Image (cartoon, rainbow, N blue to C red; front, top):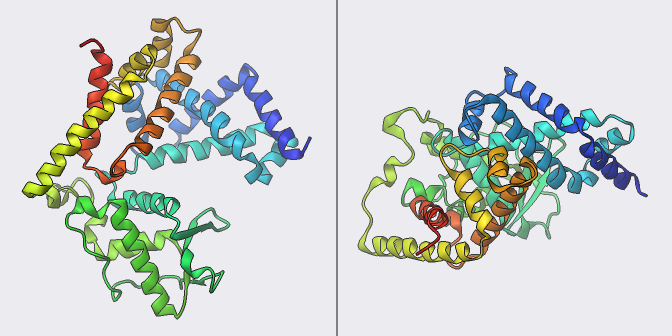
Length: 352
């Protein structure tokens, strides 16, 4: 057995031990109590799961254990230091590292357009470069993303690095967007990234490799509202999008609403009855805990409910990713919400 396979099995064995849940819950609880936990994260998580603290700890612990199974073990070969620690008997160090990654992912979900537009734009840029073959993405020693235009790699496999502390005030501004809604769309951000890389190449005399956060910094110089606190009522990101739609835009909008309702009905017909109930209970403003769901459905324990809900989310993401027409992040937020609301309504009232 190869070392990485032995390490994977050691981690699986650790997760099967009864004390694994107790240790994980202790680490989760300690992290929530830490002064380093970002302000507001606990409140956001509590709203997502439950206002009861121990319920929150239990829910996060279950999500974390699922993260270990579904994310860490399959990727363990990418972390030689981690599987060396496992082989040396230091499982707790590995679990602590994994918890930091798990919490980072939760924090990333908290980077919303309303609360933190600059952090949100960085997340959207990161998602864009990962999904489009026009960009070559690499990581440095600190795991930060660096990007190069893929078309330039044939001529120069390693692009020129961008000088530190670049001043972007005299750079050409990014391509214009009709509204601030459009500014965040993937199709627009793709144009922004190509524009930035081309401009950097012209200034440095050839293809460049840049840290992705430099694009965020460039945008913050030319779109100052990205730096404004969301609490400023006169500068909310949605303000510029408040103008009325043209008749053509209104027609497209209404057609999108009707089409997602049809898609919601199509998805609903393929859901198992228990999946419909779990979906309804979990997406309420005050979500029903997995422990309570297990009791209502007669499941052996809350782990079974959690696995069922995780499966629903995976299947729903796959369905949305493959549906016809524009991708989900190109649609109006109201259209996306209409899909979820229609699905919720169908699950709550399955009979005609």
